[in-house]
Length: 115
Image (cartoon, rainbow, N blue to C red):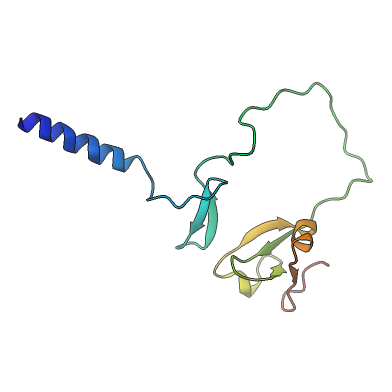
């Protein structure tokens, strides 16, 4: 009987230890880390394929392709920033400039990011 109880307790504690935290993952498999103020993932997003078929065609970069500009937003703000802006002290999420503008973010007046 004592062995059964010990085995049961071991299984319960082992199963609990497998999870990094109590949950709260969004549909992309990620959540906010309150200590570091960053967003991170525990599993890949559910809407993306887990395997990718190999491609046989190769593309060469052309001079006409635009290089995407990366800007940063905060968890609760409505402005986008450049790295090093003082408003990014609590949280910092990287986005493409075009995506940030399409989603209503406006440039920060302090760090003056690209428009």
